[in-house]
Amino acid sequence: MKFDVNDIRFSEFGFHYYRGICKLKLSQKASANLDFNKAKESGYELDEEAKKYKQ
Image (cartoon, rainbow, N blue to C red):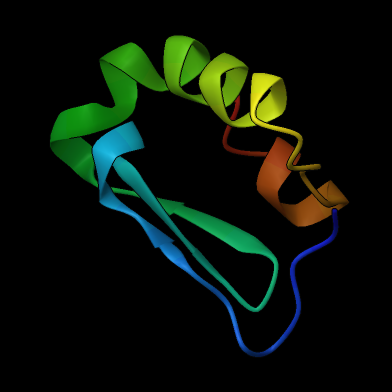
């Protein structure tokens, strides 16, 4: 599943997707890797821009 302009907010993962770009809250960066893994396990793909936020 790919994100588009009608994107969804995944606040339970600690970050938000908007137009396919993952915007991490500064306070959530420490748990970014775990959150990305949760999103991936749920069947969502990260685009190249979102991957830049992954540590």
